[in-house]
Image: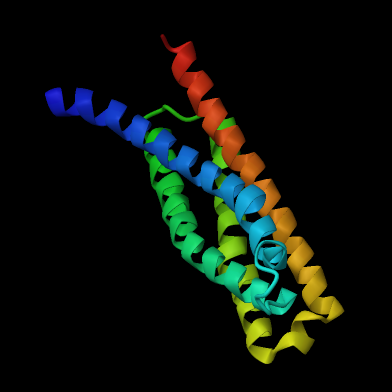
Amino acid sequence: MFQGKLLLPLAKTLYLWVLGVTIGAIIALGVFGAPVIFKAWFYLPDLPLTKFHSGILMTQIFVKFGYLLNFTAFFIITYEILAFKLGASRPPFLLFGGLSVIGIFLFTLYYTPYIIEAQKLGEEATGSSAFASMHIQSEWVFKLLLLTLSLLFFSRILNLLGRK
């Protein structure tokens, strides 16, 4: 009995923490990381870093970030399924969670590998209109992911506050 009383609040807290960390990382990468990486010449004018080189650096950051995203996706799946089975889930949670998981897997399993392969082909491949289109799509998925994760986070917070 004691374990159940402790386990459920701990799981809720950990879930919200993981969502918050992931949301914060998305904001940090988009607002702080990318602008610095792609304008490195501004900070280090003697560094011969092209846009192609900056793209390679940013991709490596996103590859590492992909581990957190995939962990978050599996956490969302696990938590929301268990919450649904316990009757603690409602359609908005399932919708926001499902859209977040789709966005995560699109970003980590579709767009990121495409960008990596294009970079392996060289600067010409990353200058193509096909690459530009895929890159813009990946940026939109990233922005939508921020939105869906935020909606999931705040809907879960409001649900907790409403129960008190």
